[in-house]
Image (cartoon, rainbow, N blue to C red; front, side, top):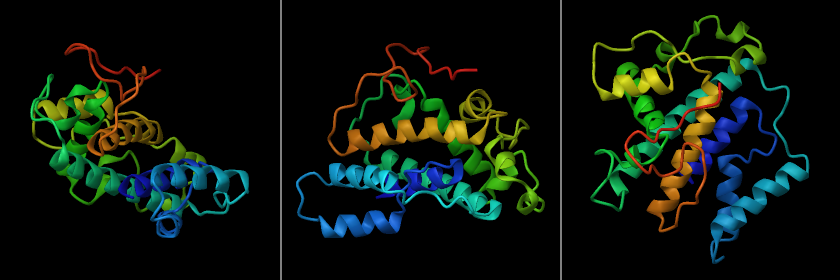
Length: 215
């Protein structure tokens, strides 16, 4: 459900017309609690809502999209906490944190650095004036970028991960990438087997086998 909360908030921010709300997901889960594969039921509900036109309200205000962004960021940190706590493997080949074996693990480390630097005031990590945000258009928010400025005095691996993976990049793009890593991490924690791909959620073959986003 945490993953659905995160992806739902990301969907409302970037404009994914197939978005299903957390409340709807909970209702589907309750109605199908005895089903053998709840993930498939939720996926089917997500797809059905997209086909039926239960889509994102195009009249959502900029403020509502802005709030959806902060909701997504907070869900992401909560998922990171959960995966760090429940990670099933004691040995991590290319680091010490749960995400270090993923090609896009730096995205998670960068997000954690931003969270630790700004605490709950995410606006400090974004290239936007929160006072002026209600006057921005939706397209302005879709082009919103992470701050390229130094967020804290810390000079460590997490700060380097932020600079390399988030700093100056479009927030929506990074959230979609982060969602891939979080989804795969959640699948592993729940006993699943990760797929083979070329994105940020692929498992590294060697230490420098890092995800490089398309320019």
